[in-house]
Figure 1: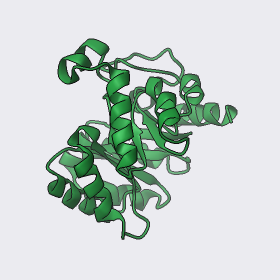
Figure 2 (figure 1 turned 135 degrees about the vertical axis):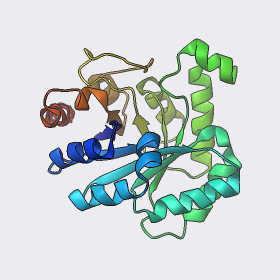
Figure 3 (figure 1 turned 120 degrees about the horizontal axis):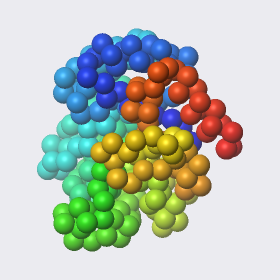
Figure 4 (figure 1 turned 90 degrees about the vertical axis):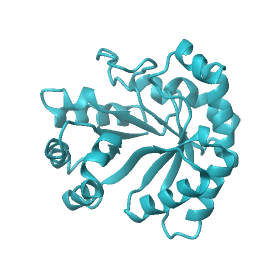
Length: 232
């Protein structure tokens, strides 16, 4: 299980400062929609300049017509990021087209699909999809697996189920992590701690506010990484 630190701070300067403080840590960095819209590909280049060993997850959740998604996926891969995601609700045709576009690329990025956002509770999800979170997340995961993608973004509570119905090597990345269980949920509904993530065989956990709201973000990251390592 790897820690992915969400760079969701209000300015590029703050995100870069946080990344610099973590330059010696074995972590992934997540660049989300807010940061990328504001800072563009420059943020990726700056992060690589801090430490070329940083692995970057570009979290833009592509959702468009298939050819547009494939074009965008190719452009994202050319940025040199190690992982990005699309929305599973874009459908199998779009997801397969994305993977077909990338298949000849040397060292292509990991590609995930988003199943059910962790900000959804059961009633809110049902209103949009007319299915339960577990039912639809599993259906989306099967579509993703059959499309040749590497894994999904889901909550901790769907991770094990998804692996059991696809493959143990099918990756799960889980947001909504409150590392030690005592932190505020904020706008997340389906949250979990490190122990639960480990029990559900999550491959990546995403942590943002519990790190950058800490008095010492580096110490918070070190505590999380040490907790992960202690579970191995």
